[in-house]
Image (cartoon, rainbow, N blue to C red; front, side, top):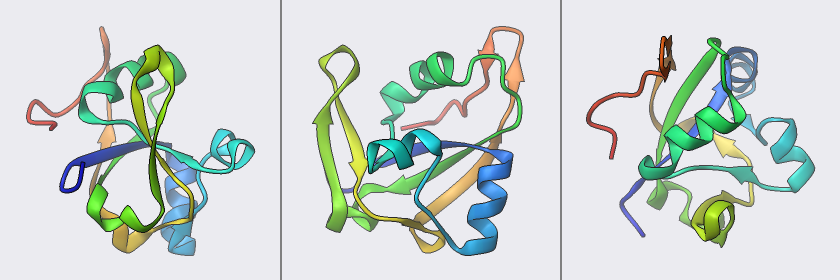
Length: 115
């Protein structure tokens, strides 16, 4: 799936720590599982609703999968879908862009052009 964007939702405190350290091994769930969980554009809205419902202190980071291909594995997870999992730290240089993930009346507000 090279050349596709994958997405990581981080809490503001996790993002700030990532900025300070220059790398992250992810959120507590990532540390417990031994890899960093990502979602595709088709999956990230459901991920936000399931794991971050009602939270408004979030950042959406976009990573081109080819930037992390050395340690990226696609594994079956929720609803028998393939999800991208990173088996190394995520580095600042891996991130293509990031935006605050605002909370609206009907859930999180994602960019219209997410792909």
